[in-house]
Image (cartoon, rainbow, N blue to C red; front, side, top):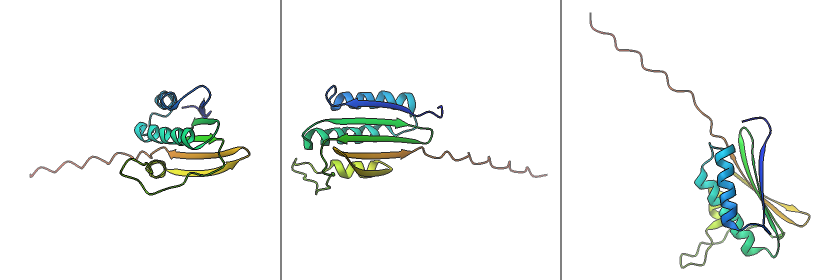
Amino acid sequence: MSNEPHVVVVDSPYRDSAAARGAAAEFLQQHCPWADLDAVLLVVSELVTNAVRHTPGWWRLHLTAEDETLTVEMDDSSPEPPVARAPDFAGGGGFGWHMVLRLAGHVEVRPLPEGKRVQAVWRRPSVSAPAPAPAPASAPV
């Protein structure tokens, strides 16, 4: 990967959550193959779903891949931060924000002039050096 970040942006007037997941999957395969695709797509899906369900206006998904990090940002028109609530096993939801917090390496919510930004960051896993091969056993003499 070059030192320049790779970026994809998906805007709400043109896309839905399925299109956002598709764009994210394609982006990860091209620019961030080390990332856990299922975890990132679940976070993208939850962030888009929350923006569609809980904000009155626009949303914008922004993914950036750099050498050591993947950043997923969801900007939306609501100034209200996500709220963790008790999961409702009878179908009332409450699972999404908990999943986002568990799946991403770091999550931050920041106000914007006209809404907020939810940022989820994953760091590239460190690759440890392979363990040295064991020394051959000496044969009896």
